[in-house]
Length: 131
Image (cartoon, rainbow, N blue to C red; front, side):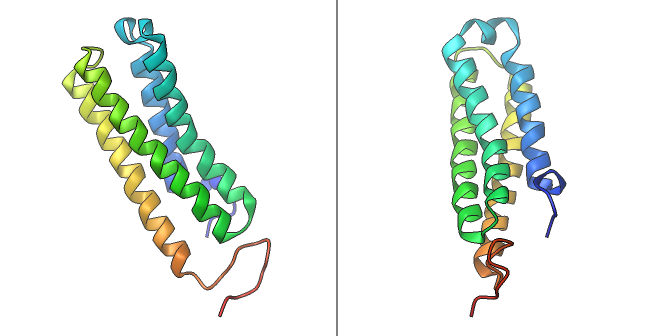
C-alpha cells in the first residue's frame, strides 16, 4: 500500500483529469459558460480531493466511503462533458480524451474499492487485523 496519496496511481490519474478539465474549460467558448465551467472543475477537483481525504482518514471504511464519493464525482464529470459537447464547447477529440481519462480513473477507483473491501487490514488508525 502507498505511504501517501501522492504515490497512488489513481490519485495521479485524477490529477491529470483536473489538469485536462482546467485546460478545456479555459478555452474561449467554454470559459464564457461560467456555470458549467465552474461545476465541471469542482467535480474534477472533488475526485482528486476525496481520494486524498479518504486516504488521510486512516481507516479502510472511511477511505472506501470517500472513494465512492470520488467515483460519483467522476461520473458527474463524464455527464458534464456531454453537456459541453452538446453546446459546442468541446471538439470530439477533446471530449473523447477527457472521457477516456474519466473512465481510467473510475475503473481504478472501482478496483481499489474492491481491494479494500477484501483486505483484512482496517487501516493505519486501527493497526489490527479483521477477522
